[in-house]
Length: 297
Image (spheres, rainbow, N blue to C red):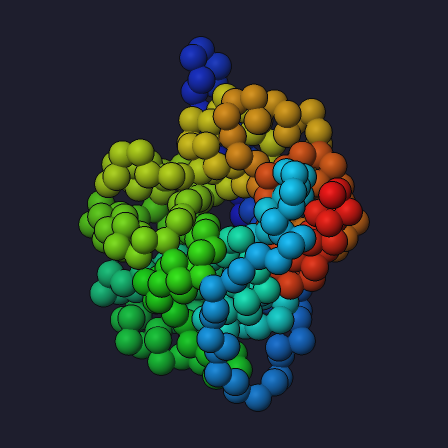
């Protein structure tokens, strides 16, 4: 994702904190997530998502201390990122959550794409907010997949039981925020809205007080400051250690770490006590998580 730095100020009582929020979760705009094997493959239809029935390893006789897995832009190592194929692969692997990015088109439709332009993922050119939903939807996002509308992805999440971690890439207008919260409610999907942009979270809260929201960041944020933006906290894996996780938990935060794609990182984050791990390699993560959970029984 595109690396950038955001300045923001959080006030907790008399404490003022200014932290640079750098988006390490945002890769270089010229590189896909974890350059998976989907590149150069012939077009294929998105697999039909099925409701996932947990196996015995995911239904332990005692609580299983394994972080929940969240599919970063879907199963983006295996399929074109942020497409229905990627999300179907993720829920088919048993992902408890799918993480996705939202921009708005010129005619006000929320669509699922990471970058502000269609250039990297489609080969076409243009800003998402300068194109209509029909124009965006006609583009090939890889292997014959299209850039989906948000409501289509939410529908898949609702049918599969996966939680949707909806990242806002821009600050929505009041009308866009109203459309967003109505769409989320209508979908009946479990969701959290998160963003690097505190103003985006405030816009959602203004449209729906009490909406589940949370901060995503590449920098360390003190617990009290992070909790001002909601109970969900998504932090770069390099900022995680057991003491920090304990402090964030003490502030009432559910802590997710991004982006971790190998068993060594999964083990370290699990040992640190995070609640969830955001990964490009969700099928592999679910195999690892089931094995680790079974070993605890």
